[in-house]
Each structure stands twice: as C-alpha cells, then as structure tokens.
Length: 429
Ligand code: NDP
Image (tube, rainbow, N blue to C red; front, top):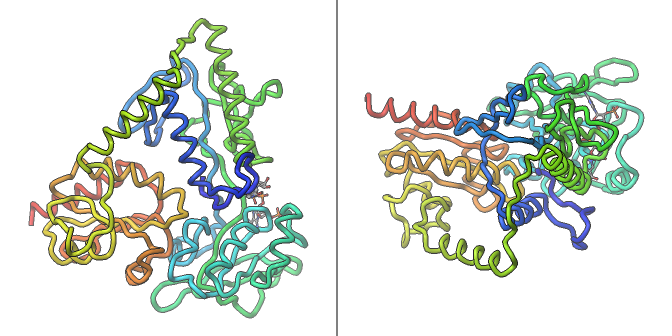
C-alpha cells in the first residue's frame, strides 16, 4: 500500500500510515502460521487441479487461490513521458515527493479524483506551490477531499486543463508543461513552469499475468459473482480488493473483501473435501513461538538485515550491506567490488517491498558485491548529487562509474542479470 496517512481505518483514532498498517497485518498473518514468499508470480495455470502458480523461484500448487494483486497507477503517455520519467514525471507523489529535487519548487498533479487531491495535499509539505490540473469543469473527488484542496492556499486548481507535452532543462530534467484548454481544445500559450508532474488519474488492475484465464471486464478488472462478490469465473479462484473493486478502493473495504474471499475459500475447500485444518497455536504456544523467533533473529549473524548507520568507528569493508553516506563514500572510493546503492524514503511503500527482495538477491553475491542503503530524507544532499527524483531507485557503480539505474520495483531476475553482468565484466577485465 503506497498511500501515506490512512484516516478511515477503524481502530486507529490517530490515523496510521499505509506501510505501518501493512506491516502490522503481515506480523498478524505470520503469528497465525502464514508462510510468506515475497516474489512476483510470473504465470498461473487454472486448467490443472490443483492449480499451478509459478514465480521465478518456485512452482506451487494450490486447491484454491485468492487473487489480491491490486491495481497500478495509470500514466498519461504524453510524447516525452519516457524522457522525463523519474526525471520529474512520476505516478507516485507519496514515494517521490520527498526528493530534494522537488523541495520548494512548483509542482503539478494531474487528475480530479481523491488520489489526485490526496497527492496535491501531500506535496504541499515539500513544494512552494502545487498546481492541480483537472480536465473537466469540476473535481470528481469526495467533498471532504475537494474542500481540503480548495481550502489550501498552497494548491492552485486549473479546471478544463490537460497536459499536451513536457519540456526539460539542459540537464534533462522536467522544466515546464504544455497545457491545453479542454473546452476550446486550444493550446495554452504560456507553459506551466514546474519541476515535477505527478499522475493521479486512476488505476489499471494487475491482472496481466492471468493471461485471460479468468473473466475480466474491458479494463481488465476481474469480474466477481453478484452472489458473494468474491467468486470468479473459475471455481476455486477468488478475488479480493482493488483487483476487482473499481468503486470503493479503501484499505478497509479491501480488508473486508479479503475476509469475504477467505471465508468463501474455506467453504469451497470444505464442500469439496479439500480442507486441511491447520491447528491454531494456543495463545501460550503462539507467544512462545514469537519469542523464540525474536530470540533467533536477535542472535542470528546480521546477514539479512541492514546494518545501522555506519561511521569511522564501525565501518567494516568486509561486510556486504551498509547504510548511510559515510559507508557510501568509503565504498565508492575503496571497494574493488561493484557497488549497489538503493535510495529509499520513509513513506515509500514500494521501498518496503523491494528491500527484502533485493536483500535476498544480494545474499547470492555476498563476497562479490557491496551494498549501501541511502534514506533520501536523512541524506538529501547525497540524493541530490545522485539526481534521485523518485524512490526506490537502485544504482550500480563499477570503478566509480555509474553503470546501471533501476527505478521502481522490478523482478528479482532483472537485478540478478545486472549484478551478474558487472561481475562477468570485472573478471573479463
Ligand atoms: P478516479 O477514477 O476516481 O479519478 C480519476 C481522475 O483522473 C478523474 O478526475 C479523471 O477525470 C482523471 N483522469 C482520468 N484520465 C485522465 C486523463 N487521461 N487526463 C486527465 N485526467 C484524467 O481515481 P482515483 O484514483 O482518484 O480514486 C479511485 C477510488 O479510490 C475512488 O473511489 C476514491 O474515492 C478512492 N480513493 C480514496 C482516497 C481516500 O479517501 N483517502 C484516496 C485515493 C482514492 P474525470 O473526472 O474527468 O473522469
């Protein structure tokens, strides 16, 4: 979940951040025996029983499946979008807004729904001014959200306005937007000078990997039965949350939908005599198990966790994983190995997803690659000099030259390929 503050989740009177809510749910699932694999599913086969699910790392079989893959932010696809992607254009204000490149600059958000309003308000923390570009006569957002935007002196709303294209500065970063008046269809002569443009124009469901094995609507959203709002066109496959829900898209409605899907799945397994009961741990056993796991984690060599901020007293070049600018400087100048740097920010949901994934891949290169994590909120000057305009961003250096930049969260294979290429080139040199 990449939203920042969740104000409407019951039980959190002060609100809760999206990443924290996810972490709490994760811990709760683990406590009750769920096994979590943080990897991308590349394909499914619903023609076989049990169903087959393939990731890059394993093939699993399941008598029933709940699909809860959510939806991804849409893009405008203006002509120079690729040119300025992560160089000023972004689909996630929450992830990228803290970038030093946007600090005290004028920024734009496209869209008139709740997402766009939420992004515009969020960006006022960093920007000198936020322009909300709404293509219609009015905003479609809820009244509460609209009012927050209209009450803010830092947000300027431009109605009947859409973006035709973008232009950049000499360094290749976004500098201005070419706008169109949607009422007259005429270009607006004066470009809008902004350092960043963020999309808040809706979402596309993450259903491509299903390869048309399930009924979806014309936009790709899974079609669920009217009867339980969770059964799909394939018996034994259920859907939960934003992957089918176009309308409500709230954390609480997605959680409720997950609960409905879980109960429907249990009923299905029971009816088909496929239910294997996992005996719940009683409270005493559960507590003991959690304590034992915590103890084990504390005692384990710090292999998978990243080290605390490093300084001259505790820097150790033999260690693979580091944090902070001191380690970055030391390794950049002194390490003979390829150096992987991951730029993160505290409110970035995708960063939380990428960290354990990248850590697992890096474990395969324990003696051959160095790694540093930089929090752009703690080390803004480093992020600025590295040209970071969004997180997560992974950069790879070899012999002090930047050889690869990977924005966002990619499949493990993509990171492996880039790391291995650097090692092959090193050994060939
Ligand atoms: P919506 O579909 O509600 O809104 C999309 C917005 O983008 C609309 O204003 C639409 O304009 C505009 N748009 C779409 N395509 C383009 C385009 N090509 N060019 C310019 N503008 C475009 O999506 P949201 O993501 O905002 O919200 C989805 C759901 O999630 C809603 O139910 C919302 O309530 C919920 N939500 C709630 C939040 C909260 O309460 N905290 C936060 C975020 C979302 P037009 O109106 O003209 O079609």
